[in-house]
Image (cartoon, rainbow over all chains, first blue to last red; front, side, top):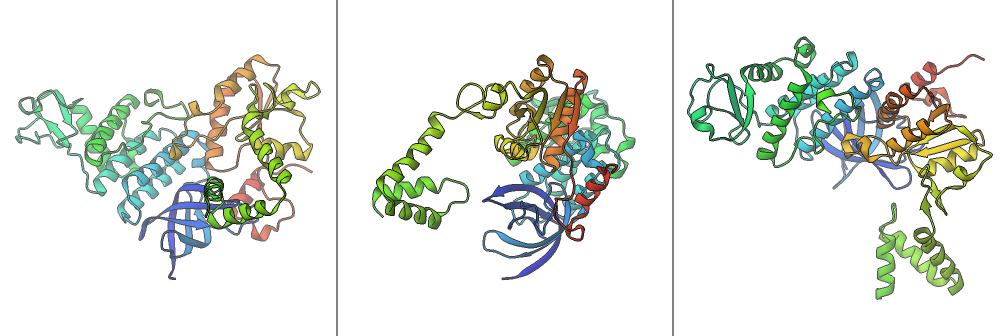
Length: 254
Length: 196
């Protein structure tokens, strides 16, 4: 039985038996994997609060055929400031859910790991306006796992320049914009401003996103676009229950 | 295994924490007991589905429409303690430190498990806080990420009603050494320190 030590994020946990938990972890090296933390719900558990959702932790575990056995764990970051904001918690949890949706057990994605860490760090540093970070997280995650929607100013079908057009159509099927000739009624209507916003959201590091000014109703539109794209190419929504903010502070996102 | 045994094992295995071996052990034990004892157990289990309801006011387990606590006029009706699950009430009652009413949410907001505020008994709580003579709402939700998120949501909804909102203390369990306390718990204990 091999023994491993790894830095992970806690992205899901399920109560199991009287005092155990099955936790889904996301490591930079190992990707998504699950393990059982025996007795971790007990007050005097050696794990303490290690497996609180979103925590970054160092864990030691034995490899099992189905489930790994967690033998040690210590929280490295528990995002104290983030956890004082309901909106920031919701965004963090939805991003964690997206990791589970996008990645299969054992699939490694170090760039998604770094992105998730950068997103939580930013949410911990500044709790206001977290939805920009959330939409950028979805955009970049899709890109890092190989499903990169194209927001270039050309028609994906015929290559025609789209700069002159004020109204654009994003085709989830094509994964990008189509010109008037090629669109045949399909797709989501966007403006050139939206296209530029999406390019910026994809390119700007999470730590510098706060400088961008994007209205919340626009973020809701971009989320719908990404969800449609994900439904077509991955056959699943990014988040089954849409971008509705459970904190109810999401304005147009709610 | 003969059919009745197989069926009983199969049903027991549906319970949390009961696997094939535990289920078989329990069934073989029951087969050694006299018929009357097994009948009593069977009736007790049957009663769970036929006699136990959820209190229409607070969501606690009850025999009638209202639970014993909601029906008790000696309880302090100006306080509502909010818990996520009915069995948390039993635990709080065992402390004998609280004599107010309760409200069971039925879970915690958690986007990972697809639990949204509409899935919980939050609207009912807001109505109770509006309509009844409530002056304080005590949040007794689990001190974990989902619990914090739910507490903050409730604070946002309850604050405009003018009721006092408090949260049970968080920190080091009684009888435990500081040495073995994790930093998040210790941090909460310091934040919540009080004058002596």
